Image 1 (cartoon, rainbow, N blue to C red):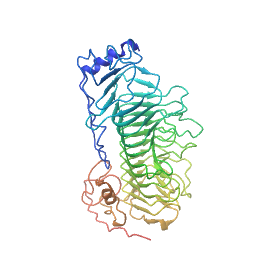
Image 2: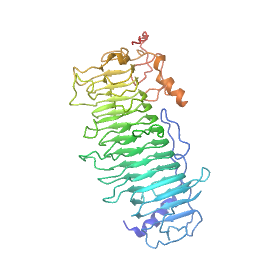
Image 3: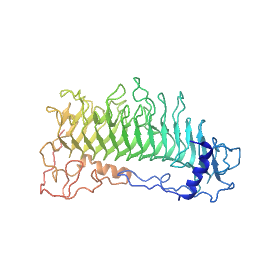
Image 4: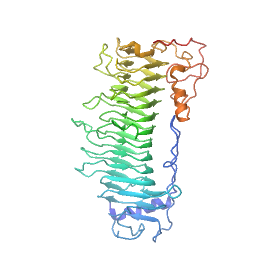
Length: 480
């Protein structure tokens, strides 16, 4: 690439193409963020042959760049303003060997934009941090320099967004972290942070989530040496809350696709996680969590071709509660070391966490085994699940090491059982649909495909049929 022409090329593309707005496509159970997705990149000056106040054109690696106030495509500014104010628009071109450490002093009415060309992204080869208020970073690629040990991108402050970009690390380090509030990660490729084949536990996650009111929507996470997304840690429950993770894809990470530690009100909806294998860092589930979270929701996700589907591991101090697994499609997760007599074995859904757990309206098919609940598991509410085509002949559909912990498990469908109109209405004792709407003001009374349910009677499993079988079963009896 001839860097001397980068500025002119990018300017031509910007000036001939209309400003593009990203579109918010609703995710089941997740509210729309108030800032960061639908805002259009501003139209740029045309012609842009002289400096215009508030519009920066920056290309430190381009020929002829200098210390100008704003710059133009023909005569770029050579440095990125570190403290832009309300309404600033910064067009970034070229390659940067130093990081972008920026503090945006912007407002809701006049946000700031740092934008690159989607067909020829600027490349920042150093750890970068974005802070401040009301900022959008769009179409920028950030990676780590060889040997650099750091997170690749930090997103802090309030009302900030990083979208349509690429975030990569090195074989020893990298990843993204969030802090503050009202931060959005939207439609990014986040990959190769750390060494996915490392023998040690690097924990280089695609995103390490802290803060509150954080949206992670429509991203791809792959080959990170930790989880694709990890939420919180021990002791962070009060500071890490209202986290929304929707319609992302995670695959081939060293640990899992999506994982929650200590946080509250975490909604993980309509994500796809596949091809996660066991390692010294993980049992290879597609998604799950550990320690003492509260109000953790796994809704309408697909978890396939992992060692296990959804798993919850050990508690910390035992303060976790309200784990929910609702409407998920979990299939073809195979555990070659599964032990039929061991409830600790990783299965389609497994838990040995002390929090109470509600497992309702899921479809489990083609897995080694069904639902495993170790004796450490808190009270489990298990109904309206379809469990079929298990790949280990003597595995149990529902294996509860301590039956007293299961409120009831006798209202699920196994191989050959009817599922259409064969379910029960949500039980008043533990109605996840009512609990969700009470907490968030949003209905999740849908099936995996977004179809309202019930149509007539409740169906068993993740999928609601508009056919009727005429079956009107009696409700299950709660056991002690």
